[in-house]
Length: 224
Image (cartoon, rainbow, N blue to C red; front, side, top):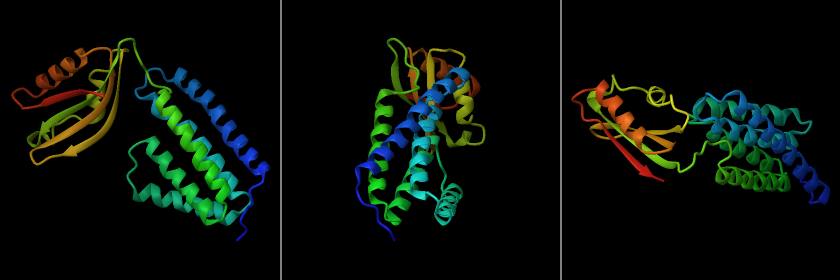
């Protein structure tokens, strides 16, 4: 196994490749946003475009001209894809990143693995805290919405997409599905929401009560 040294040229080439991959995809992410204004949760796809591009650039540095390594990467991604339930594009980005870094370390490319991990980690944090691609409105509030359905409604309860569509006519709101939670006597559906005011909570509550009259459906809205 050939372990690379730490020449300055390796550092510069890695940073140049990763940086250009990120820069190009920031531009493409904005193009995607312009062409898909009507879609919910555009920011998830936009952020993932940048992450996956940078991670793939790092993967190509590790693979080089080694066909065996390329097949190994494809095999690893295939196993992960079919054995793990991936919740979002961002989850897949982190899984792919861990595969690439693991392969780099296993092949002895420790310096490249470190550069990829540090650069991508900083990029991910910067994008996360800058809220790249997200919709924000003047005086908007960020909430965690939890809708609790009794188990008697398990077969009738709307899915997450139907819930989001029920209040998606307005342009001053954004909802992101988080997770399902199972309790002894109820099922909770959790969302993250960026809304101009609390009227959307009242609207959603009215929609659900009209659809399931007499049922004990509760909605909790907590500011994040």
